Image 1 (tube, rainbow, N blue to C red):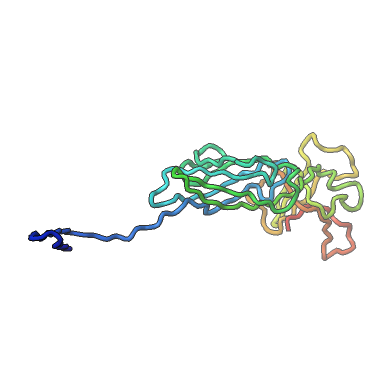
Image 2 (cartoon, rainbow, N blue to C red; image 1 turned 90 degrees about the horizontal axis):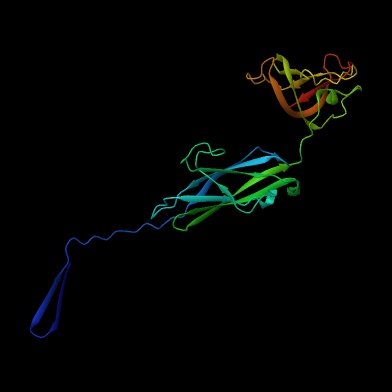
Length: 239
């Protein structure tokens, strides 16, 4: 590039600029929330909800640190729950950009879908937002196996989701037999201390005879198709 000016009488002026480079600039980007999850799902009143949010840093210039918070007021928590990426539980691995924290779910949250707004802020003050929607349910009643069986022909809990625990006594191709843990039997001959847990397919190989398991499932009454007039058998079902 050469520029010549002649505004001075008797004097020409030359200006030279060599190696001129014009570059297009890249617009800066803000940090963003790329994914989020809540555990357990659904979550019950009285349980602790673990919140995990994956964040991506901003650019031009690059973010050097990120802060992530969750607004848990919709589930009865505080307005700014810190989510950390420090490798301390519930954060599994430090520095992997997955930020985790936890909050207590209060009965005041009611039941249904509840939104938890998420905010990520970088060291330059740039922010991004996201939302985690969690499903809140009423607490599942905890009942013993004899209470599930009841003293009548059918269970008093038919059609209800219940939670119970017991010792695995046998495995089948489609479920598990469990019974009351020793010392927890009700000593009532009219109420069985065992129940079948129907899984429809092969149960998890981790559950073996002698293991104590906790089960949350729907109570049902099973009548074999080959013997339709037989008394119903109370079972717990995931199907």
